[in-house]
Structure formats: structure tokens, C-alpha cells
Image (cartoon, rainbow, N blue to C red; front, side, top):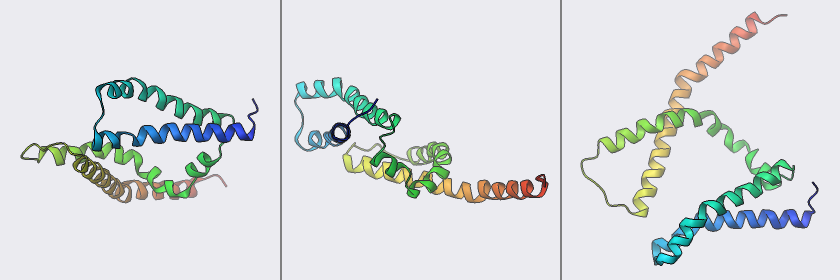
Length: 154
């Protein structure tokens, strides 16, 4: 299926606008408050609209109209995170347990507190994942490469 360049641009802009609005519209609720009707509409449609925005991007990629998506995802910036992501996934529960089990009192939810914990937990999990990578994964990968070189058929 061929999509004209003008339509591709419109679809990309539409998808990014949908995803951007849904990602950042909750800021208005935080500072100005929403009516009950708007809350109902948002809760009723946000996941559907998010799925539509992602579906547009995925369909454009499946049709090989990658554009900025390919450029962003192929960036070498993601390589270190790709090596550490599974270990960070495994260790983030350890970080959560340490932080929340050592807490002596409850805290009131505030946006700044939530962001502080989110960033702190993420950084903590990746620090532990990096230590795991350097202590276990990298030496074993080097050992495997040495064995494969030594016993590879000539």
C-alpha cells in the first residue's frame, strides 16, 4: 500500500499530537483541576486514543515509512540501556523493596515526590544493573568469546 508523502506527514503529526497531548494533558489537572465530566471523558478515551496513536506509528513502520522513528530508535544512545535493561528490570523490585520497606512513615502523594521517587528508583536500578553487568555478564561474555576463538573450527 503506497501512502503519499503528504499523507505520511499528516499521519506522523497526528500520531505525535495524540501521544503528546495524552502524555502532557494531566499537567492541567494537577494545576487547575478537571471537572467530573472531563475526568470521565479522559478516563474513557485516553487508552483508546493512545492505542490509535501507537497504531499509526506501528503501521507506518510496517509499511517501511520509518522517518524519525527509525532515526530515533537506531540511535547509538540506546545501546548501553539495551545491555542493562533486563538486569534493571530484575533489580528494580529490590530497589523498591529497600526504599519502601525502610520507610518509617507514610508520605502524602505530590507530583514532585512521585517524580523524585521515579527518577531515584530508575537510577538506583540502573546503577545495580551496571554493577551486575561489570561483575558477572562482561567477564562471562569475554570468557565465552575466548573459548569460541580457541575451539572454533579452522
